Length: 274
Image (cartoon, rainbow, N blue to C red; front, side):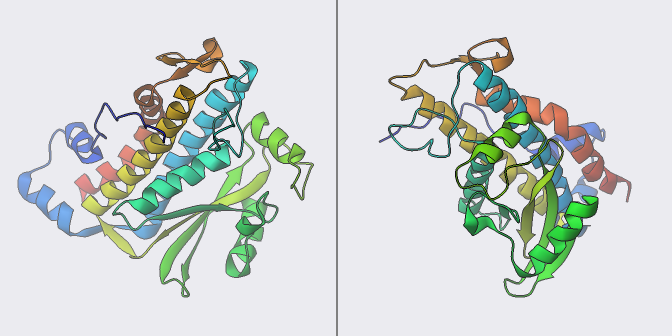
């Protein structure tokens, strides 16, 4: 039985940051913002998609890419007892999606492609059609999925690091072995049941994603604690680029916030002007 790290910090409530950034929101206006639908589902899914882009790129390049140079291993079977490794980028995303699914926010997330390593992730029907357009212009596609009664958004998932290209090209189950940096490898698909969200619901969506990010990263750190044969990287405030190190969950999330919060903040603060 594995013992997961205890979270030593609370997830920052984005709403409080926005209030500070805006110089404070009047009480009556803040109450109204919490109850009125102020964002379309497309806006919210685009916000969380951008957060995901930043997080996955950071994990892929700074943790997986640089980590491999330090001798760290990453494997699709990383959760198996005899495998001493961390999650590959696609499995990191799956871990985020699993965490979100377990929570109270009705946000759906998964990654698909027309050439997936796992055949179960191959796009079909409407999504397959829209993915062809995404490959052409890399623009997001929005539609309402009648079969699931869910508003759906698809965003291009690019080969942003050499680690992605090498892994997919060399994988024994790959159906495409000539991926290049910058290729559209797939699309992240997000789903939500409502066509518009309140301010509070929007913050809840963003926080559920942040929580998912921390949950899977902490699971990786816990995995390291159980390594018996492999050298354990030192966990603290340093990154793999400096040696056999990994950042704590706090340091990792803080870096994500610094890279992504400005654009997200702009969207959320815009309602203060309405």
